[in-house]
Length: 196
Image 1: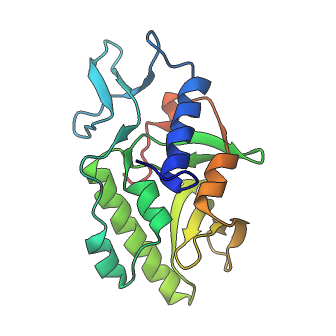
Image 2: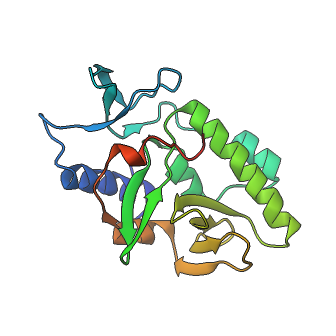
């Protein structure tokens, strides 16, 4: 059961809004290219003649284990980061925040989750090298800018490659998620899973 006002509850509502925005129903589904070596519990049925598979955001069973990542980072993950990456399988979702487009970077399967954790370790090492606190990225704005959760405070921040000092966006991830607008989903957003 998700907690009202928490990240998991905000994600449930976001997925409902996203499905409604994209007109998904009995006769229409979210689709993405089939990758035989990159299966997911999100996939519904078999492969269509055009090489697409239908999918929907799906609960992780069991939820992700972040213990090894926390050991490698030598710090516990903020609960919002755990909730964002540790409860749902999903393709990346296009959204906008205050008119700025970005892609929410969900994990598609266990392999994707492992790649994400490896990338977060590399990100943490770079943050440590430049003397900044650890952040966990969860959305891409473009090839140079991304949105992250500050692990110490839970605030959402905008980070730019090569620039020090992230810019605060919202006080929490849940606040960010309820304020975003869903965009149209196309396979162009799904062909490149960001952790791959």
